Length: 247
Image (cartoon, rainbow, N blue to C red; front, side, top):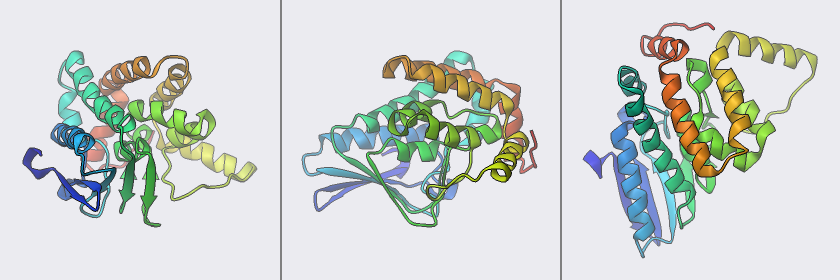
């Protein structure tokens, strides 16, 4: 594995793939994605591993994309950003279509792309304090790749709530009428990028009418295009500079 970013071992016919970048909350850098692709390819071929467990070292399961790397990529060409998006697409599709059962063992927060990583697994087991969320809309980005899989798994209505709100959840939450509706609307207005929510809605609509391969190609292009948007640049810069952001 690349610089031991991912560890692989087999015990009792269980192949353990472990994210090993705890100092960066296991953020998905290009190198980490490469190492994960290699690990899943190895696990799939390994005759001693019957079931695969994806887990992580450190306090977080996975914090999502490496935003410092993503900010650098904003200065690259569109074609280079599509290639980088396809790199993550290939990992998600590899896990989703793996010939062996994949279980996510979530010991800490799984956010944005990290939540996507858990989503494409077949089963998820988590400690009660672990928080999940597709938080991309909060920094002007979009959950492009994962929405293709999430809609397939839980349907459009439930996926819309998670993808457009960017809320962190620990379980299924109920909705309460007028007060809750108003509070939720205000929260969306204040916390989320309008551009990101608009694009996410468009994608949720479109990906359901095309094939998985076409949807992922479309998602990779949308992912790359959105990196060049003013909202995404503003959101990532504010996050990295630890500035308060209001939309």
